[in-house]
Image 1 (cartoon, rainbow, N blue to C red):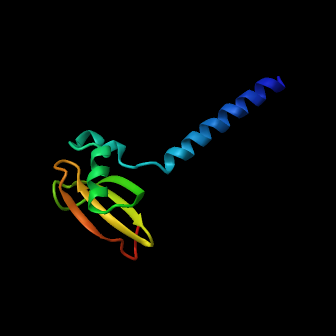
Image 2: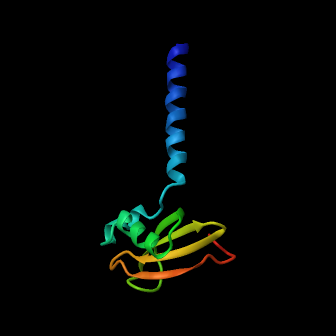
Length: 103
């Protein structure tokens, strides 16, 4: 009985760890079917516009372009730049320092 309880606790722990890892991953999976540009391609476009390390990424509906965009926070040194890529055309929509009210 004790062994099966430990096994259940182990499985529960693994499930919770996997859930927590996904909570910090890329957001926007529900919109991905509408995108014509994949996440990897959008990353390449964003990093060409502002080289650095991507610290946050999401796919969201937002005004401008086709209305569906990938948003990336890219850190280079002490500067974090917000770079937006249209998810349907691949056009660069934004490349500006992240504002004081970053999400």
